[in-house]
Image 1 (cartoon, rainbow, N blue to C red):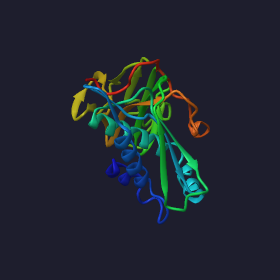
Image 2 (image 1 turned 90 degrees about the vertical axis):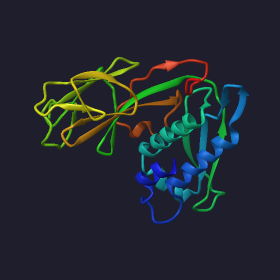
Image 3 (image 1 turned 180 degrees about the vertical axis):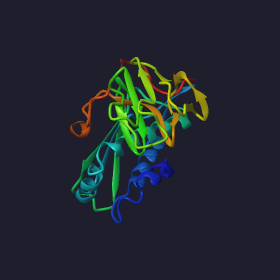
Length: 239
């Protein structure tokens, strides 16, 4: 987990708390609080509050929703690698704590059963785009839903289809073609973490599982993502 956040955010600040230190703290909290509830089920906390000094809080919230999204994804990946399961969707929030000195971080966690919001997103050139429509066209033309600055792509190069539970990629008769995970593609199902390549541009499809709760960065997101809610039960890797 640390390596991934390190690559994205580690050089953001010269002093004070670093994002990679938050990632380490979240992983420790997961590993410490994970509890074996049956032979094939390890339950881990799914609601986290990351508390930090005022100066650190201002810097971290200044990064916007990208940081919390990245932390959520990395917690999911660590939980999957350890075969942890959650009682509901993940919720990570940042909080200011005036009793902490700059550079310190404390994580509080709890297990909360509830709904899961499945948020489909596309990561393109360092930006994250929630899929808010059933069809999203990507290309270099101004009439595309997502415009990329890449002369190797067609004006309307490829489209991503989302039906609320699964995604597909479809090449729109582009000049140079499209690739899915390194292989030529005309139309195919998109699994989470799949990479579509058009020209020199890589498009990573992800589905983020988050708790159905208030988003502290909701006013800084471009649009509200399409959501699918699964009530009750456990969310986690199949056993």
